[in-house]
Length: 207
Image 1 (cartoon, rainbow, N blue to C red):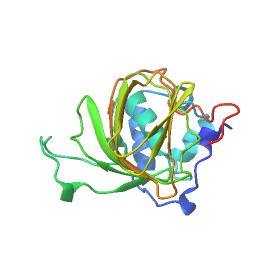
Image 2: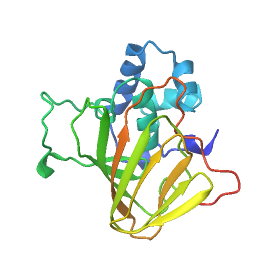
Image 3: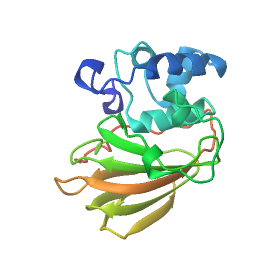
Image 4: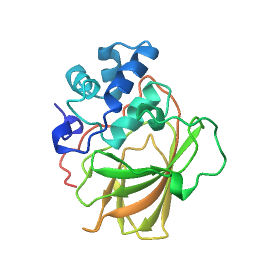
């Protein structure tokens, strides 16, 4: 099993009770077998099965991968529904969601070609996850300092710094300081049946 699959069990992480049935239903709606969906997400069929039965909770990178594979959004995977796509998202309406140690808030409307999030990444959380997928990503550091690995280069970003990159470039995000980092994050929702976000740690690398 790769490091990208070693997620905390439901009993050790905040429960997201709607995720398991949504994952199963959306996979079936996409007419994908468990094996095909797992292969596209870079997971083993056994691990995806545990996600679908609630025995494991998905990380945010896993949710992003599955959203692309199932042609949907993280909001729908989490069972969130919005009657109308309002142009304005009020701060009071942004409910925090925990996934894989990250906390994030939806900062944009669902069903769009881009997804906007406000994300808090704690120190030491998801620092070993390397992601690769079609599209583009843009991030802006609000608080704390961020360590961004793009290909073979490591960048350190301070508040006010931003990055905009082709997300086919292997990349990983980690908080540099113990207080964690908070950032704005926008990514394109391009679909690809061969997209793989979670590739595990880069050989020889430490978070």
